[in-house]
Length: 295
Image (cartoon, helix red, strand yellow):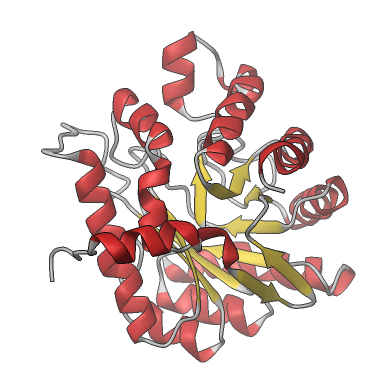
């Protein structure tokens, strides 16, 4: 299967019911007539923005709890950098990085909603056993398809993201015949596979910055409404990414305000989960946008 066709009546119906979804993780209900914040916690030495800052257990746990206090709805924990040019790490190394952090955060706050940022079946399974509630897979289940069954087994949420290639080479010779169509078709196919596996809580992510040019990233933000046709909550992660720096000539630590401006546009165009490094600003943005356009 290479594409999924939707007739006009079905498309109109999906747009009309886009905000009618709700998912529950632990005791927290997510009603997607409003937007939510996913805080990024990279337990890595080499992530593009904060690599090394939270590589040790105590700083990682402390930062995760701080983001929850600031209002993050989900904490997304990753043990492998997926920045352009990055090399993969072993499953055992990834486990050593993320599992203690998940356990300790939940030991302190047993209502925290934890997402595990991984493409590996083994990592997803162990994280879900320890209490994670969502698997955020940058490959959308295409790297290790067995991950669908693991997510179903734990009745977890699943984030299906579009990526072109692998992180090591994804920014080399980026070309699309039709960007929106290709991203849409991938998300349609992979979300159908997830549904066929019995997964009920699915998010879609167009993969801003993952095998995309600067122009591609802006086009995806502008065309987010197109992905409402899939009738699944849209997640976007554009925080501090290089296309912002290239467009405005900004260093990494100068990109939060610009990131938040684009987050506003993304929410206006259909995003319901904002993945961010700066929870404090993103919470303010979501609250304002919820008041202005989503009620």
